Image (cartoon, rainbow, N blue to C red; front, side, top):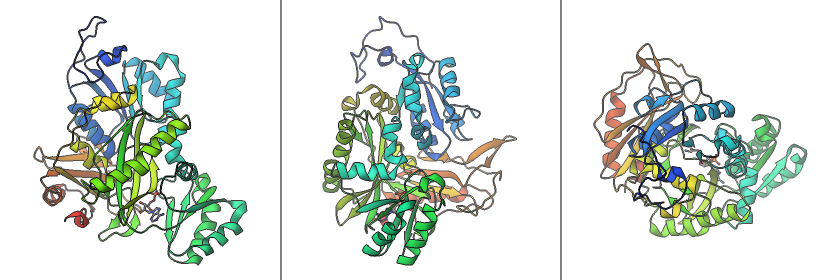
Length: 455
Ligand code: AMP
Ligand code: GLY
């Protein structure tokens, strides 16, 4: 990182894409950035931010043992404590606030910053509470898709007082049955059931409080059969640019078996997301979503994650998220060659149309190393032995922390090994080679990440 340089009103024009804008931030050569979060996604974001010529200072709150490589951790700063974040931003003269996880966004961090005149000079990446409902409420997002003719599975939503109607709707569908809690449920709110009876039992459990208030409303959805991929758009609410497409692997076991996890690995690019498919994605999904948000008066400055199902060449939306994906980000961001801080500023300052997105042609694959027992119970605080990989392999820490000068495990998903390769196959070879060299008791990982994407 470079030292912050002084900025004068008379500073000569630069060649920045948004040359000519009148705010100081556009003219500043380097800026101070606060990134909120502590997972593998935030490690990859910190890696790209620290590489930027525009980054003078980077703080990560709370961060993990790995993010210290890229900036300064602020372990006691809670991403949900907005007044404390505001104090830090003012004290440290932060120019740009970037939120990694969904929770602060769904709780309204962008609205909080917008509501305080003393923070008006801070550029903020991430939607307000209204836009974050794309992720925070599945009922909202499905109704939004219907309003804007965006392809998605047929569904109906029900509350506890509508149990009979909900059971009748289940009877009208063919198995398997997809049930979704409306609100945030730590990634566990979706259940896919094989029989009508299991679906009804699961429905009653959800409406009965299995996921707390997140399940006050439950969606019952038609099952879509196909192959999934994750598409990311960076938008300032008017224009957008797409990031490299990725695929993630959610289940714990090889061959997509066992319970769902926060994500066991990811791969980018995805061969079936070719031009013909992506043209459909942009025309039928990305553009209608961004125009739909604008037409409903929702000012969305941030990333939109489109979880898609490719059904015989046609894309359908499985879910929206109001942030980058994890562990997709660990494969997507290393493929962005253009300046990432410029992209973040373009989002916050309404200049995405001018952003010169440049993608690395190489593939990147990420293998997630997890604690023994995860996604069930697991032990934290296990000492890790980390190799020093070559430059084209990155160790993106997720659940780690420092303890007595040692890196120790501090979560279920511990570390992503991300590697470049000329092909997906070559990248996977490197990810797996280093995955073997990372040592900690109980280490577990999937052995088949990306296997289905090797042509
Ligand atoms: P979500 O949290 O909405 O992304 O759902 C979690 C996972 O459940 C998705 O990644 C899909 O694998 C699966 N899923 C969700 N909705 C459907 C659907 N309508 N048809 C088939 N699979 C689905
Ligand atoms: N990888 C899926 C997610 O981030 O929600």
